Figure 1 (spheres, rainbow, N blue to C red):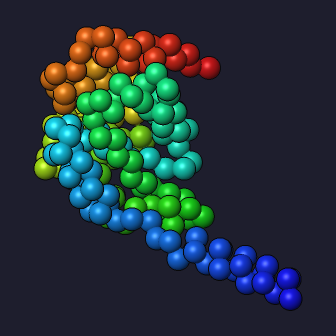
Figure 2 (figure 1 turned 180 degrees about the vertical axis):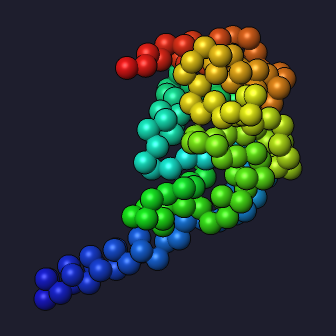
Length: 173
């Protein structure tokens, strides 16, 4: 009897993951817009995929204990999954690819854009027509900082220096 209960519980648990759908891009954005409007912040929308090494690096940067609170002081971070391989298609946010195109991408991942509380583009990660991706090179970091100043004009110099120092400490191997 215990085996039957265990198997039924396991099947129920597994089914909950299978039935859980990845939210559509418009659902995610509706929540982000409401939060941005309520908190007077800008949306930082970034697109990535599970196979993308630079996307993982951007996620790690945004989640650093010294970066996350500073970044979230000015921005509502939103990640949407696009361009997944066949094995991970279920991870993609439906309609995210269309939103990515709408904000100027993609031309490689990660691709990101800063949007106002209504979802209108302020600036995206294309510099001279090319996506900077993860800002790891000096010129990419300079552009990323310009983007943040444009998207959040009230960002303090101290906060910018914190964000910049973490980016500049990156060493390519």
